[in-house]
Length: 244
Image 1 (tube, rainbow, N blue to C red):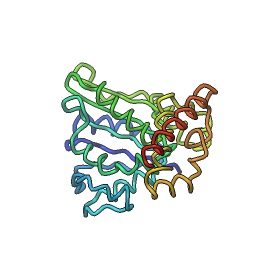
Image 2 (image 1 turned 60 degrees about the vertical axis):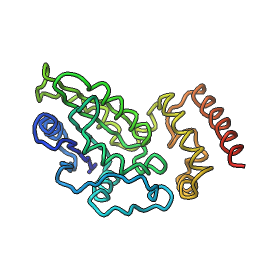
Image 3 (image 1 turned 135 degrees about the horizontal axis):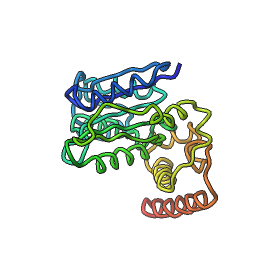
Image 4 (image 1 turned 180 degrees about the horizontal axis):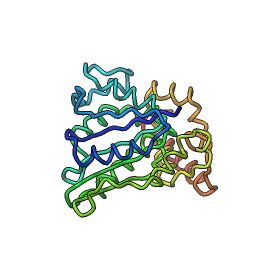
């Protein structure tokens, strides 16, 4: 049975929570774990880079438990209220603590789905940030639901999750078409992984990412392949030149 993790990024159990509970009801037949991050001890990142360079975090709290749940899930649904055109601060702190995933993401190929709720405006900016985050994680962004005071209801059409459910099946990701932005981001990460940090190099080589045009086999057209390869070669030249 496929495992889905739903993360409520609100400290309250109101609009965002209600939407997430409706989405949970549409996932009958899946092993769903619903968590409210307010129930966890989450301390802010101190920017020491230990997780990136040494592979461990010195902060003693519940973050590793949550990140472990995300790692174990086959798909992830994240909901957040919109505060000043961004996600909630509490959710942002959690995401900051997973900054090592830009270098060594365990979420590659997993489908993600986002939900935001706001009084009036700001959802577009918040969704844009979450979409960028999805690119950095190497996940498959399967869509989003946004609600404001003019359409703040808990009705969610079941078909809204069709794409999410489709990519829960790992075999289907061979049909995925990564965007141009995803190809460029992947090659940026690959250059850093192969040339800068030893732990990154080991991880990328073990995963076999270093020899691929993208994290996994999928549908990439010739233009994207050639552009990605050229970008990788150019950036590698720049990095190596400045290291010497």
